[in-house]
Image 1 (cartoon, rainbow, N blue to C red):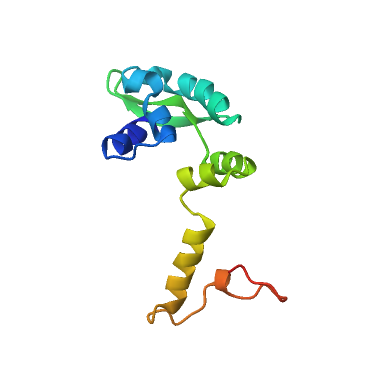
Image 2: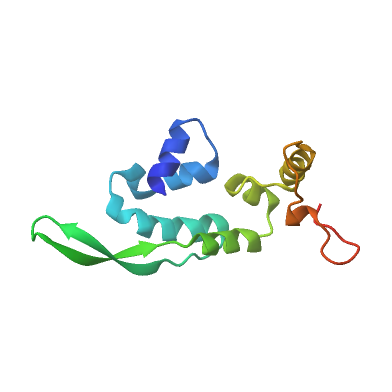
Length: 134
C-alpha cells in the first residue's frame, strides 16, 4: 500500500490521501512500521478504524533450506470499502474509488450504446418493479 501510493504520487497523483499513504513508515524507509503508522493515520484523518487480519503464509527460508510458516497482516478490501461507504462522503469515495454517480452513469450509458453489446447487463435491467438502477 505504501509503495503503490508512493509510486502513484511520483506519477503525479498529488492528492492528500495518496500523500498520507505514501508517507507511511517514513516514506517507506522503515517498512516494518507501515502497519503501525497506517493504524495511527487513518483514524485521525478519516475517523474510522480498520482492522488487519493475520494470515499464515508458507515461505521458503533459504537459511534453513525449508518452508516456514510466517504470520502476515492483511487488510481486507471489503473492510476498506465498508468504512469508506459508511463515511457517506462523496468526495472521499470519488478520491479513493473514483466511481462517482456521474462517472458510473456515463460508463453504463456508453456500454449500453456500444454496437458490440448484444446482451443487457443485469445492472441495466429492471429489478422486478418500476425501478431501475440507471
